[in-house]
Amino acid sequence: MRALRSLAYYLAFYGGSVLVVLACIAMLLIGSRGQFRATVDSWSLWQRFCARHLLGITVRVEGALPPGPVLVVFKHESFFEAIDLPQVLSYPGVFAKAELMRIPLWGLAGNRYGLVSVERDQGAKALRHMIAEARALSAAGRPLALFPEGTRVPHGTCPPLKSGFAGIYKLLGLPVVAVAVDSGRIYHRWWKLPGVITYKLSDPIPPGLPREEAEARAHAAINALNRP
Image 1 (tube, rainbow, N blue to C red):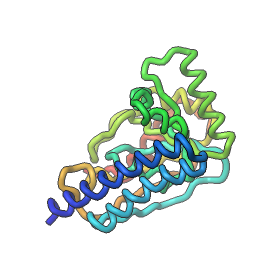
Image 2: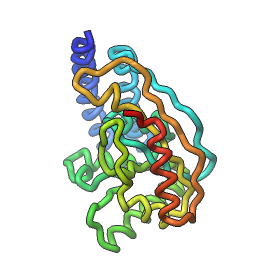
Image 3: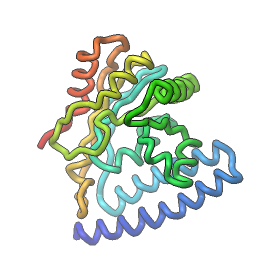
Image 4: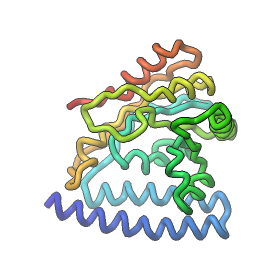
């Protein structure tokens, strides 16, 4: 039964994703920014709909964001939370690997939505450009989202944060909310399991802390649901 439900999910979600991509291309060419945003958000909504009705997966959010500009750092266990970001945050600006931004059309769509390109071996000029983009998004009232582990990690593991987190934290000077996610235990597998994916938001970590303290607090908070 789990295999059949998962196959139905793949057919429905990825089939619908093709339509969303085509709609995004159309909105890039002829639509307004608001129409484009709504199209991207519909992809996120479609994932939740398929997960709920085909896989028996629901989502629970514990905690809330503080008012004002904020940097939100997420545990990253599966594709689910990456696609689900617009459901957790209101119109987020997202730090993304530069490799993604080089994909034809996808990179153009990401730039239009508000993805901030992160070069792994960036020089000072690239770093200044990245921070300037992030500050502009934050000044427009958008929360910023970052996966500080750099890539997806298996549920039950606690790798250290990438060094980029400390630099972004220092240069932006924003409070940080760390989000624990436990999607890996039921979603990141071929035959997905029914259950609840939980987001657990931490209390704000204030700006200006020493690097070691900021990293330790963020690392502990994103792993709050990380049980083997």
